[in-house]
Amino acid sequence: MKVAVVGIGAVGSATALSLIERGGVCREIVLVDVDARRAAGVAADMRYATPLSPTVEVRAGGYDALAGAAVVAITAGVNEKTGGATDRSDPEGRLRLLGTNAEIYADLVPKIVAVAPEAVLMVVTDPPDPLADLTRRLAGHDRVFSTGTLIDSLRFRVHLADRLRVRPRDVQAMVVGEHGTSEVLLWSSASVGGVPALELLAQADQPLDEVKRQIEDDIRYANITIIEGTGASQYGIGAVCARLIDAVLRDERAVLPVAAYHPGHDVTLSLVSVLGAGGVQRMYEPAMDAAERAALERGAAHLREVARRTLGVTARTPPAG
Image 1 (cartoon, rainbow, N blue to C red):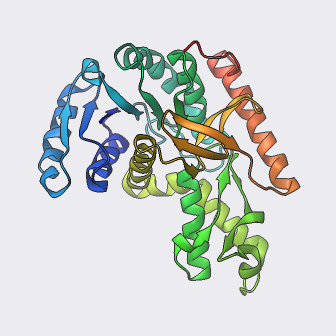
Image 2 (cartoon, one colour):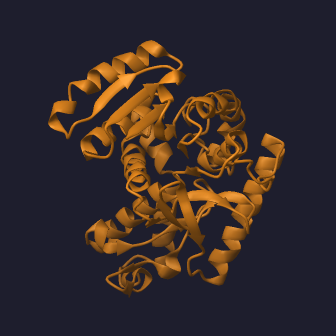
């Protein structure tokens, strides 16, 4: 199968490399960028790594090269550093990038759909959730999802594991809602081997409320911390993108916190999503306490208002295809 990555900056490049390293996900990877020389250079560099993985071809091309792609990962646009969204005190966070990146998407999504009308479209560019709403409307179909809060949920597991001195893979913890400042950490259901994480954290010397605040800050502002050190957050999200593409191509029906349009909330946001062929097949609301549910509703309302104000639309209009 063919996978395409549109936008070969830090995240697009990391996504392509993760696909190669994951092995056996697809037979062909096409890299498309407004800077054709950059796409060609990255493709040439990565080709030299392909003998170390199962057979895969990496090449650069224009939009015509997207024909036949099963999944198109869209990573094009300005990032938080370039777009001036690295102020921890700004409640809008990465939503500051929406106006600029919406213009970019308005140009490229129709070009993608014209050549690859059957492709599943995975939105990675920040802010991914409102951009997925826009993509869904521009594409005219529901085979659209964003990477959502999977990366945030992985960060939640890592930080809990650090505090509890266990493996991250043995921690069950989820973040829902917006991939952004209004995201909701589900403390009420976080656990390790069936034991509530809050019970385990309460045994530490530090006050529980302070521990929770520190962890939440570490997760909400992880991108900014990474950007301050490296200039771009790329490797974690690149690995996430490869994992999600794998789930779609194999029709895994994997249960992951990725974002798709939810009619009940009338906006794209992350819940418990079943990901497989065609993208997100079903969505469920996980167990939440009253405070978490209220926070989710506030976040969804804010996303709806942002879409109305910035994109000039709501997400409700059903797709044509």
